[in-house]
Image (cartoon, rainbow, N blue to C red; front, top):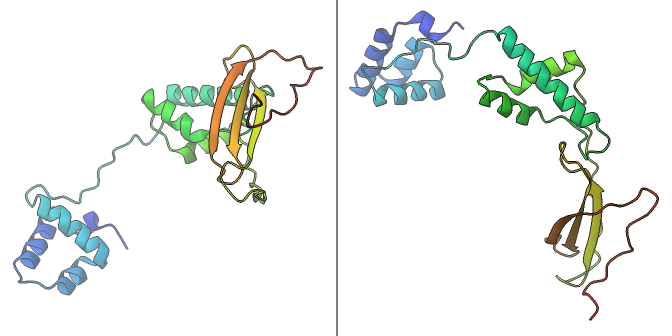
Length: 205
């Protein structure tokens, strides 16, 4: 079915809504004349009641149909920069964040959808399909909160522009799975050495 604004003028639709509001035309009759479903009819009716004089169904394009050469260059640079981060083995980043990229481009005045960014990414080879996450089947070992606190630590270059690796230390309650403590610190660890053994909890006096 063709679009409503191609079949009726704004004035014709306003007249039909006016007749309906005055009780001179039934909803079924108005819908039949406009060839609209119930949901669409009431959506337009609400719009009409908010401003009968300014009501319009005329189509207006709000975005540019094509990206400029400069915009395309900005998108390409953003994708290649993201590729450098993803492929950097020192970083704990294994996938592309196209949504964040869209938001950064929007701040520069380039409004583009995530779908379009992904199309550009595939063309440039800056795309990795997301892996399906494994079902977490970990068994809770305790029957009450605080019975067992599990500690973990991992060393990464947490930010792309960081100059050295930092250690993230976390403490998690086994029963509730709540994180009780988290801290990061700079600790230079030789590749030939391992961090000290597990930390006991509660701490010994």
